[in-house]
Length: 84
Length: 523
Image 1 (cartoon, each protein chain N blue to C red):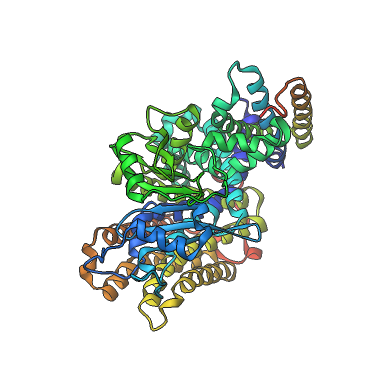
Image 2 (image 1 turned 90 degrees about the vertical axis):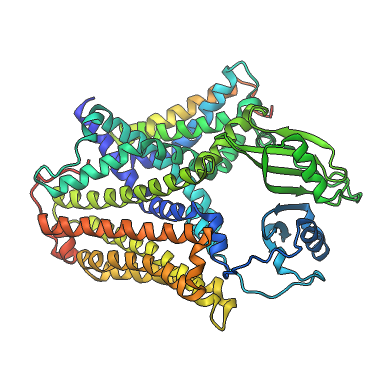
């Protein structure tokens, strides 16, 4: 169950974390887009592992939901959307 | 690490392994054989002692295909070789349909010649990258690769503290089950880097579309799709202008490529909007001596004027990272030695997945008593494992039997039908008979079938055909599969002789008896 939650909620979180990384790194993300996508896969797998070691299902799910929400809010402060 | 955390890591490793193990077994077994994909393309066709090169060339093939299908030049790949091939896309009701045509499919007048053909190599490849499931199979394998990556990370966390000890742990210690556990751990630890490569590159190939979609929706906006395509391609996809133009000959494209990259071995020629004044040609291939060996020389289609070159040491960072994703996955960077190494590691990977599933089933029964889930998982594992192995062997046999029968045009259907029917029979048998009987019958059967395939091929096409390098390599790989299956069968028999069968293997689900709680743990 925890791994399933990690798989479902880990993908958007991994993607948004990579987006935040692109906003922070002082280089055009177009130039390292493939690296960003590879990192996204690694983050996704790592999030599944982290969700798996949570002490309970609801804690894993809640933490991932809150993290997704926070990452989304932070992304709204960047100019990434529509800048592709 | 706290005991509780370690226990959860072990549970995660086991569950993720269980979910993805069978799909990974299919991908690894088909992938191991697929290491000789090019040779298999030759193996699947009727043997000719003297290859008929004739005057077939890529220009003639290109002209013929374009003359027969005006839209074929919108996107086409020309593959050079003894028998050039043209792979082109047709849009039917908005859906892309890919066609493959060979030079020998046409006579000198450019008319289609009816001849039997096989799709065995393509079928094995499809089993490898999408489990033979159209459309969604690729994405499914992408997600499974991510889960596989998670299982590897978990496995590393579990085994890191005792890594050194596990290299020397392959001994019975008075318990045969301990031997299988140690074997699982040893194979996992030794081949860890190889598995990591496969998890990352497999996930990349399967999930890049999903990642692009999600990144576009959440982070960068819908234009991200175009940015990703531009970053990964050697040259942006051209748009047709509607003005036709005279195209340069294929030899001129090759001459431009040779001039720019004399050391490149041409693997394909990609044509886009061929026949239009905006047409672009990408001569792609390989520069030996590099892991990231892919290279591209892009030029205009009408006059072969150079547009760009992307090669080792001279390419954007995105291409620098993308090229090894493919070469590390396909193992095509180090010649035959690396391909044989990948073949062996692929088969070892199969052992890892099957042993993991079996140990999980036994441990669950040991710890929790009779378990329907454990019994079903064991039977499903045996059914799918034996079904896939036997099915592929019978597909090989069906290829030769159908190709030389009075109905050679049934070859493609026969290859796939043999696989599907065998898989179904194997799964049904696994659920109908006790696992012990299933393993006792099907494991040696698989091994014998993989010996029989080269024998059948030799007896039909002549044993002199074994000297053909491509047939030699494919037949050799099948015999190596047979040898490894005989070895596993011997280990199985020894375990049975020395330790006796686990109750889970003996009877039906309802007859399973409980085991002592202190039995061996899987991990």
